[in-house]
Amino acid sequence: MIWCYFNFISATYLEFAIFENWLTNLVIQLNNNSMKNYLSFLCLLLVIHTNSQVVTNNTELQNAISSAAPGTIIELADGTWTDVQITINVNATELQPFIIKAQNPGNVFFEGRSNISLGGSYIIFEGVVFQNASGLITDGDKIEPIIEFRDTSNNDCTNCHVRNIKIDSYNGAVSQETLKFKWIIIYGEYNEVSYCSFIGKNGVGSIINDNHNNSTPDYSKIHHNYFADRVPVNNDINGLNDQDAIRIGVSTTSLSDSFTEVYDNFFYNWSGEVEIISNKCGSNKYYNNTFRDYQGILTLRHGNGSEVFNNFFFAENNDFSGGIRVIGEDHKVYNNYIEGVNHRKPGGSGSSATGGINVMNGIQDSELNQYFQVKNVQIVNNTLVNCDLAIRVGTSLSGATLAPENLIVANNIMLNSSESAFQEVNAPTGSSLYEGNINQNGSWDLTNGVNSNQTVGSGLLTSGSDFYRLATGSAAIDAGVGTYSFLTKDILYGNREVAFDAGAEEFGAGGTVGPYDVADVGITLGFGALNALSVGDMNFKQQTIKLFPIPTNGELTISKNNDNIGSIRIFDMQGKLLHQQHIEQNRTKIDVSYLSSGIYVLRTLEDTVRFVIN
Image (cartoon, rainbow, N blue to C red; front, side, top):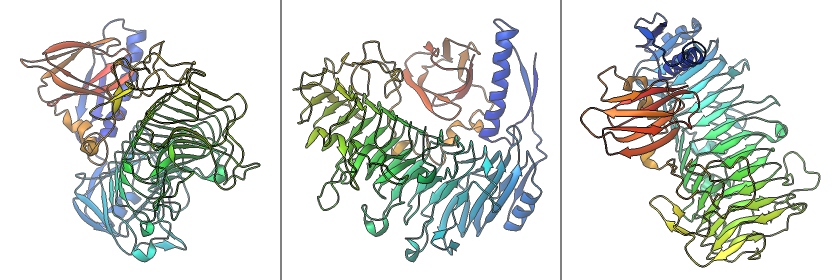
């Protein structure tokens, strides 16, 4: 029997998750080492939190911060707060973080010239809406950021989280549009920005800039955020740089690794510059993101060894739009779905920087801020639909003459390419290989019948409710060639077969993770979505859903009193949707053997229940 004590009433979702993860690890350890089949435990939830306080004005807030310690929770009273200047340097702990949060998320508004500087460790800031900026503080050609993971004494933040906030059109004056105004700048290590909405940015400056200003890895995570309604300066998409959504790194440290992950974000109605995401360092991952109605392209601009996979791009034929641009070495681009890109600039001229997937030339003896040669890159199992130029190889900017070297382009499928399904501007060198690519309705620079590259007349894909899917009898089924150890799942997280399919989807694999849409904002991602997974949803009421056994490592039985179970969704503790299905019975078993050890959340329309995988 285990007796656990946890302060529950004042707990945020994150605090409860920390406690649950600690408890789960204990359960798994005891289950594996001490109890073969059974473990019972009782948790007494204490309701008194001596370190929590509500503040109602700037003076009270500053006083509370000055006396803060690990475990302190400061709640901001509902209402409008003006010219809030917060500087924090608190070294808290994982089990006792320092938290500043809205008393009621969405009812606390920071206006005027408000900004936050976070220094120390294990600091959480959440629940606030930034709006109605005025009198913003300038420093030369810059405006001070809204949130900075560094205090005014240049002490970086480590293991700090900004979550569940909204920044809504918090911009400088029209006369300040060309000043660099980055909404969030990340310094330090193991920091996170999640479940936020960033709306209506204009003027120069990234929304999120992970600075990576030295060679130390960051391990940042940027996930479940909503980026929408950006407008470029002078409405010129081909004008000023530094109008991206996310920038990871900087050219001066681009040859070092960051290990940052950008996932489960939604970009909508977006127009800033050619780069929506600008990768400028090494070993980063970009996955499960959705781009809709946008201009620009996800760009691996500097750095090596990054992966781009399981993303959806719906450009809706907007000019100056693309999918993924590749520069540098050892990248992997796979399982992406790209639809409706248009490489032409406003006015009609073509761009060498866009296209569905664009593998560029490099510059001899490139400087850090120029174009390094593409080497040892793998472009495999992507699906490209209704693109003017689907895949491009050897495009050139700024006099780049070094063609890609040791390039693999394999098992990609292209449908309805209006100009070219595969454009080879400059042939790659070394042991490069094009194989297993399939084209329907479009010319290309590949030779049919060589290395299993083929053009088919019909039946490759069929239009689905969200995107084009593999059709029954498609030439892509079981047509994959080569061996790729990273290719174990498809874009929907269905399992790849030994005889795997070409393209992003594996036919009949049963994956359930699809693209995001506007209806998901505030529910699955963006500001307000944490409520869908918050501890408040537990309610400690009589649950209509029951799960057993817990812990489990294979099958999970779900039962419901006197009614069909209906729709279920399973999330991990980061809020990532892993599984969804509809069950027309009141009792069933589902396979959860594919889940790793940890805590998961199962939601129905009425209930939220957590379960443990050992």
